[in-house]
Every structure is written in C-alpha cells, then in structure tokens.
Length: 115
Length: 111
Image 1 (tube, each protein chain N blue to C red):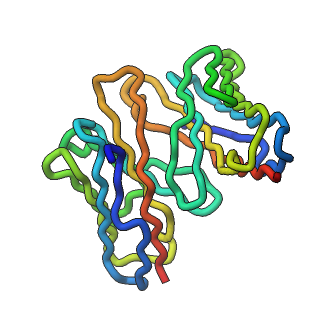
Image 2: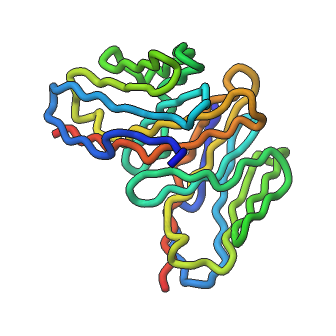
C-alpha cells in the first residue's frame, strides 16, 4: 500500500496521560500536514512540515502539543497531559511540493478519546 | 481568514435522485477541493479545481470564481454515495499549502 498511513487508528486514554501518534506519508512526499477534526466540524490545520522543518504551527497547537519529523519522512504528534477537549480525529496528509497543483493525500486518521 | 460555508448540512435522498451540495467562500482562492469522508474518518479527494467544471463518473464539480461559489453534483445517486462531503479551499502565495475546510454535508442515500 503506497498511501498515507497513521498509527494507531484509535486511542482511548485517561485525562492527564501523554499520547503519541505516528504518520507515514507517501514515499518521496516532502510536505506533511497535521489536522484536527472534532465531531460535526471540518478539519482544522494544526501544523505543516517541509522535509524535516516545521514551517507553521496553528494557534490551536498549545504548548502541550509537539510535532516532529526528524528525518523528513514519518512524523509524530505528541499530546502531553491530555484533556477531554483533545478528543478528536487527528488527520495527517502529505504532498509533493514540486507538483502543481499541490494536491494533499490524506491518511485514515487517529481517533483520540480522552476519558 | 477564509470563511467556507456549505449547504445543506444534512441531505437525505432516495436512490437515483440528483444531488447538489453547495460551497461558498469569502476570499479569493487558488484552488478548491471536494473531499469525501466515510464513517471511520478516512478522507478521499474527489476533485481539485480552480475554474470551470470537472466530471468523474457520476460526480460533477463546478466553480464560479467571480461569485466565490462551487457545487458538487451527484447524478443517479446510490446508497454507497452516503458519506460526508467536505469543501476545502487553498489560498495564494505563502499560505497556498494550507486548506481551510467547510463543516461538511452529511449525505444519506436510501435504497
């Protein structure tokens, strides 16, 4: 399968715990994006990488959130001291910067439930 | 910030009906996407367009840049078309990588 993959697909945790999600983009896609989608809403932009550089972070990304893409391939999104308001679907997408138009391809998402 | 509005929020149709979902946005864009999301979360890109009209099978997408409006049409709808359809827009220049999404339209097609 050459699509975007995310792991885990579902995560249930207790308030205050730390969680980490992983995204593997399509091979050779140098851009990677994280979005958050709450129930009944469209996705909202969280952050964006070009290669290993994190180029933009949304104000939605509080200090408890950190994202990395250490070798410019897979990315991780960590949430520390989870809160019930963090319950959402976390979506990852990737694209190839040199292609026009720069279409984003989405992964299946990680659904987080904070109890 | 671009405001993206979709209508209707919910749509129920009988199999075979012609479906139209609308999307309007407030600021000029470089491209507009129509996306499909099934229960379970995964998003599939249906169309990306910046002008005119595109057709793929029973799906047709149109955009009017002057009116800042796009429509997604489904002809001969089928229960497997049941999903959430999301409109997303891309800006210009330095922020043209970032998508701004509508809230989505939940389509249910009954047999």
